[in-house]
Length: 190
Image (tube, rainbow, N blue to C red; front, side, top):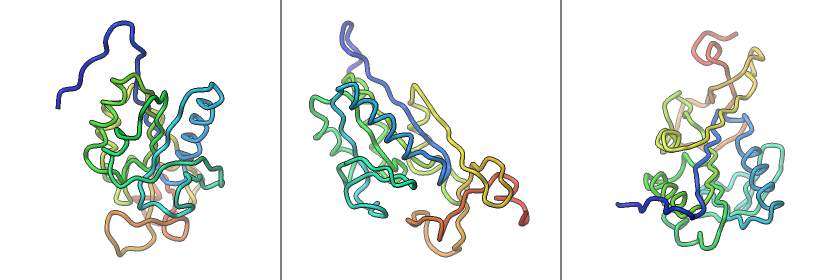
């Protein structure tokens, strides 16, 4: 699909990606940026995958229980339909969206919208997760956050899954996942 480039004199948009392992503060950082945009009187719309109901059916909620209202959606094309006269779009749990999300984000940025995306860059098996590699490649700004390894206390970049059954997508918290550093993820128990 052809995307019309920026026309001189129009407001410029861009894509920001916040990534990292589970428990690294991605959603907290997304909420912080979106609240600051609201303080600046910018019109903000926030989206999350409808499948993610861990904390709340509609709100985006961080592990420390900071929350902001969002719209749950089933596919990324819906964002284009709902993004009218908006300055900033926030998208949480981007790894769960369909393969159209990078193109949708490009279109939004070409409309002059600041797009802020948060998501896991790797799944529990340390493989790139969903559309995140494509979003990282397209982003003007990238913030990589780290958790703390529960085994040794070093910085954690991996989301270790304690349960061995199940597919790539398994919603859960500390009961199922824990942050680990490279050595504790790949090596024997610390």
